[in-house]
Amino acid sequence: MALGGMRGIKGLIWEPSILDANLGIKYRGLSIPDCQRLLPSAIPGGEPLPEALLWLLVTGEVPTPLQAASITEELRLRASNVPDHVFTVLRSLPKHLHPMSQLSIGVTALQSTSEFAKAYSTGSVHKTRYWEPVYEDAMNLIAGIPVIAAFIYRRVFKDGRLIPADPSLDYAANFAHMLGFDDPGLYELMRLYLTIHADHEGGNVSAHTTHLVGTTLSDPYLAYAAGLNGLAGPLHGLANQEVLNWLHEVREELGEAPTKEELEGFVWKTLKAGKVVPGFGHAVLRVTDPRYISQRVFAQKHLPDDPMFHLVSDLFDVVPRVLAQTGKVRNPWPNVDAHSGILLAHYGLNESSFYTVLFGVSRAMGVLSQLIWDRALGLPIERPKSVTIKWLEEHGEAAKAREMTKACEIAEGMLEMAEAASRL
Figure 1 (cartoon, rainbow, N blue to C red):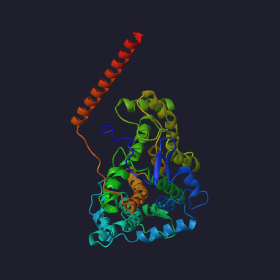
Figure 2 (cartoon, rainbow, N blue to C red):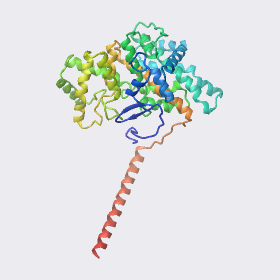
Figure 3 (cartoon, rainbow, N blue to C red):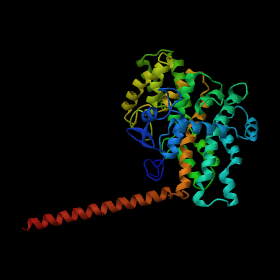
């Protein structure tokens, strides 16, 4: 375990979600299809409202449409409180700095508004009530992070003009609007995207990092800024960016409509070059990611003739078969990252380096919901035990010696029994 990334060790309490290797993510016991069926939506039969999911993650209860609408309004009001100095800090950054780095800096700059930091420094709140200012910080951060993300997008990729929020829109639609998109199709996609990326239990890097830093009683802004830095890694949130780039490589080499045989050859070429096929496999899941399936269904409904959707569908047939043939992959099936990029690009959001920022906006809901519960439960600072390589070697040899001794004792006992039996 010490050398294997601590895979599978049960060492965290995580209330908002749990990941089943064969069923996928469940938010407070509800699967993705359950959430699509039960959570309030903006349009009849539409995708869930992320603010409805937020209610579920924090309380464990499915909200009514009126309760979901109250969260929409509360987040809208809190979003107006992002201070000017946050934008001043972001304007000082070079535009070529990766958007995820800018988002982390923006969230850290927002820390000046922390209610928890203020309460803790003044000693005005008992530790049994730490969760109250943490709740305020979490809600303010969830409300403000789309504003920061939209500012980064407009400054780096567009004309720099900040688009004001539209008070008539829900959380996800307003985010799309502030980015500069007013297509109802993208509104729906953003609702789905923010919902399915919101949480994936507590062991993934961004969730665990946020929790770990939070156990030191760092406020939610500092804790989530740390989580964002983990999310920015190629083996975590940056994977959705890499998937779209890889798909473009496929089309550049094979053309816009490659055959499945050509795709199989390209996949083998990728693997033989010592690279991974981005968007396939998962550390926990052993089935096709239900989040991938939900995006596939969305594409079948809204963009069935999109060429990139056809490419992704063909790869769904080809890649798992190739990966299974290697004999080295425990889960050859596509994950959430294999599909999201082509959906965003269909609606004109083509800047792949920004995709992880969208992930970061969504993931705030899950990890900050848990941070509230961390403080409500009074969970202690996290401090696992570490060992050295030498310790592993020594204890490994000691364990082998004990096993050998035990085997010898068993063998000797069997010989004694045989000798006794021969004398009868």
